[in-house]
Image 1 (tube, rainbow, N blue to C red):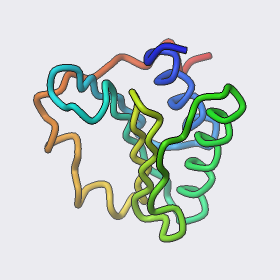
Image 2: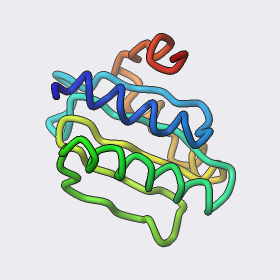
Image 3: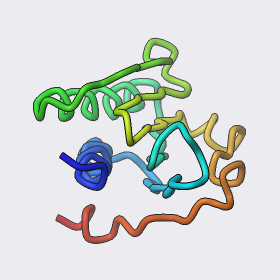
Image 4: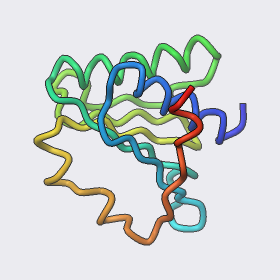
Length: 118
């Protein structure tokens, strides 16, 4: 799978668990960490964990390595590293505080409309 396929998989996994305000930032040329960041949030600790778990399970099912998963037990900000794609799953109370969209404001957003409408 290429990075766009992984991006689609991660976004759809988040959507399947009713993550809110799912966005993808194209980090190519901006960050050495990853090509894409996926940012979304859940409204409770349980939902945040469900979103992160679904992302991880979908990746493992397709033999995409999960390089790192942090923050799962606290469920305030879960970071999941899939290599070229890094997912940030926030609790709604934390998302505004960290505001990664503003921090990485020079990164263009990717249109996920077609990926999430299926």
